[in-house]
Length: 468
Image (tube, rainbow, N blue to C red):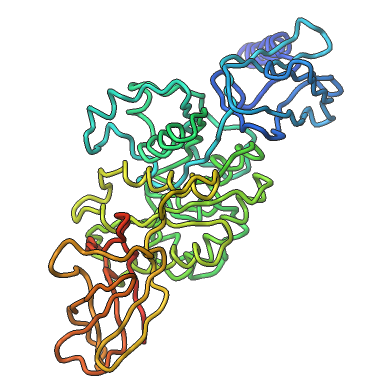
C-alpha cells in the first residue's frame, strides 16, 4: 500500500470516529425544528432516527403531563403520535433519551393550522418578483404567527426521508422571498381564524404534474415517453416521480389541514391525460398524509401561449372535471386576473384570498356569502338561442361592459362567431345574427381571453365549451 492510500484510509477512519463521537442518540427530520407549526387539536405523527432499541420520551409544553414514549427499531427509526390542544404558543417540544442529558429541545413551537402549498412557478412566485401594491404589501408583512417552511428545489431518483428547509417566521424580509399565493392564503386564514398558520411550500417553476406523483402511477407508454422527451429542459426535472420522491414524500405523514395547488401550465402540451393524472396525484398524496385532506386547485390564468391545439383551455376544462368528480376538491377561477403577455400575473392577492375563502367555508364553516365561481351547469336550445344556467350564481350574473368578451356560438357549419349575451338572474341567453341552429357554444375557451362575466359577489365565471 503506498503512502497516498495509507493517508486516505487514515482520513476515512478518523472521519468515522468523529461521526461516532458526535452522533446524537436521537435526531429529527428538518420538519421538526424551532418555529414549527403543528396541527391543532389532533393526534400528530412525529418521527425520526436514533440508536436501535433506545427509548425516546416526547413532551410538549402545552400538555407537560402527557409523555409519549417510543422505542427506536432495528432500522434506527422511531415514530409516535402526540396530542395537540387548541391553537396557541409559543411552546417547547422536547425529545429525551434514557440518559437525561441527551435531549433535543425545540422552541417557539406553535399550534394552529398547517397547509401544504404546491405547484409550479405561479405558486413558487415570490412577492419580490412582481405584485400589485408590492412595497405596501411587503412592508406590512409582520405576522409572527404565520410561519413558512419552503423546500429547497431538489430532484431525486429515489424516495427521500428528509428535505432541505427551515421554519421561518413571517417578516417583510422573509415574506418577499416566499410564495406570494401561499402568503396571501395564509394571511387570510390567520386574520379570520386568529390562529397560527404554517405554510409548507413545495413548488418548482416549469414542472409538469407527472414529476409530483409516484412514478408507477404515470403510464409508461410510448406516448408518455415522447411527451417527457419533448419536455427536456436544463432548469427543471421532467421525469415522472422526481419531485414526489424529494419534495413530497419527505413530508409524509405530517399532519396538515389541507393542500392548495397551482399548476397546469406545463401540461398544456398534452392536456388529454391531465384529469386522470391529477386524480392519481391527489389519491397518492392523501394516502401519504393518511387523511382525505381537501385539495384546492387554482385554474391556470389567461396568457398568450401561442398554443397550436388550444391546450391551455383544455387544461382548464380538465381542472374543472377534477373539481367535479374528486371528493373534497375545489377550483379557484382566475379568468379575470390573467395578463396577455405575462405568464406570471401579479394579482396574487385575489388568488390567495379566493383560496382562503373556500378554505374558511369548507374547512372551518365560516361563510356569509358565496365563495365559488359560477360554472355552467345546463344549456338549453330554443330556436336560434341558447339559454345557459350557472351554479353559484343565485344572486345573479353581471357584466360591467356592453359586450361579454370571449362569448362565441357555432352553427351547423361548426364555425364559431362572436355572440351576444343577455343576463337574467343566473341565466345567460346567447345568440348571434345568422346562426339559426346553434350546435356549440363557448366562453373564453382559448389561450388568453380575460373574461368580464361575474357573479354579483365579484367572482369570475369559469371558461367553458359545450356541444349542444
